[in-house]
Length: 160
Ligand code: THU
Image (cartoon, rainbow, N blue to C red; front, side, top):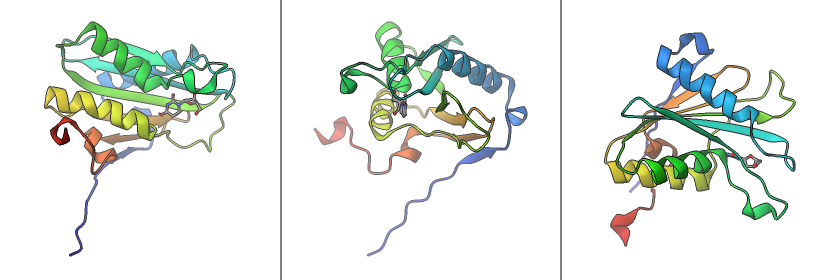
């Protein structure tokens, strides 16, 4: 029996199409990207997170001379938020990435598989969807309404 999974996403040609809070999150993610520590890949990623209480926190990728010891921007940001605001729901996550010397052709950068799994943990925990946006420095934005949309057949605590 063949079954299908359908994923919907929204595409914004430029950030002018975003709401005010989305624009703020985009700016905060871009600011965070500027402080990324990525001397080995020269690929800079920033991530901002909006909590239910209205606060916004951000993170960026942190690399290491022992390569696997580094961490992506999304996990740097969400682990800090989860450590400091364990009971606050996460409403939106905005990711901006691209090479240090980006050009207009760089596409929106989606989160890696490991980050999708980590983000999914908190969506499951709070039992409420998280809006996720990913973008390039050239102002195009993709939005999904749930981490699930990026991770069909996700593994979570219900299997344990
Ligand atoms: N990176 C992120 O920060 N987030 C992702 O989802 C993809 C990759 C970082 C990891 C590494 O520092 C650099 O980008 C190149 O892979």
